[in-house]
Length: 258
Image (cartoon, rainbow, N blue to C red; front, side, top):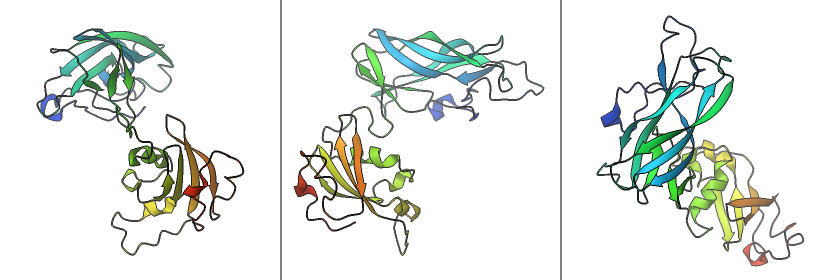
C-alpha cells in the first residue's frame, strides 16, 4: 500500500494523464518538489446509497500532520461505457504533500459524496481501477471477492470455490487448477489431492517434473468457503472417518494413497 504506482487511469482511453498516484502521503521523499500537493488514490472502506443516483463513500486518509491527506473527493465518474453497462467507474482521491516515512502516522476517515448520471440500479462499482468491485446489497454495498466475484456460484463444488482455497497456497493464479485433483465432492465435503510444486511447471506441462509431495486434503464447506479439517498421505479415509461421523466415506474409501 506504500508503493507509488505512477498514473492510474480508471478507463485508460479516457483518463490518461490524470496524474493520480496510488499510495499514501508517506510514499515519496523530500525532493525539490516536497511542498507541492499531489493527488493520491484513496482507500474506500464503506459505501451506502443515499438516493437512486447518489452514494456516500467512507474513505481512509493519512493523518497526523498539516500536509497529510485532505480534500477527499470523487474526481471522475464513468457510468456509461457501452461495453461495460454493468459497472460504474470512479476515481476517489485526496491531496497531500509527499512525506517522509512517519510524518503521517495516523489514519482518519471521512465521507465523500458521489453522484452518477443514470440510476444506480444493480450495477457494481469499481474505484480507482483497483479491485475488488463493490456490489449493491440493500441500501449499502459489499466488497466483492477477488476470486469469487460479486456473485459466487451456488454450488460449493464449483471450481471457483475450490480456486479460492488453493489460492492461499502461494502458487501462480494461472496454475490454481493444475496443482490439484478433485477426488470427491458432495457440497458439504471435498476431497482434494494437492501438490503445490506443480505450480512451478509451465502451463502446458511438457516434460516438467515438479517434484514435491502430493497430499490429500479433506475440507468442509462453511458457507463462506472450504475449510481444511485434515491433510494426509494415507489411502482411503484414514484419520477422518473416526473424527467426523457425518463424513460420507464413499468419497474416499476406495482411493489409493495420493
